[in-house]
Length: 194
Image (cartoon, rainbow, N blue to C red; front, side, top):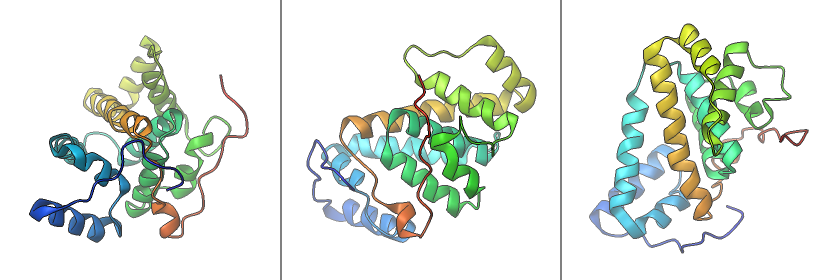
């Protein structure tokens, strides 16, 4: 982590805390800084984790599309923690790492298929305030993915906004998951987008 959180990291204690730390170390190799920040309100932490667990079980939409969508939101919002973690998770899920690495500069990259570009554009359109989603975006994705997958993709993007924005607001930054497992650094955009 490169900065300091805006709310100090709490000591994770008690039986529940010991279980959470053990689970985090087993699955991530470390206890994320975000757990210590959110530990100040365990109901919020457990509620967000519960929703995240349910999101992981959804299976109507392609896993790679959902991963790229979440990373696009994180990149746009500036959540280095979510971008790093989802890059790390893309590696664990054996997704296309060349494409995952390029998410921060997808506009300039030639690696993405037309469908992936539509998903990334849809992710950004849902993330800006006011959202800029168009009828055409939804119609095209609906034709290509089907109703169930499009609903799931839309919910994943909404969940990405739900998790990225509080991390940015609370100053939670990357814990270095990708670097710890030897992944190449994420690409950086070559041009400023408006």
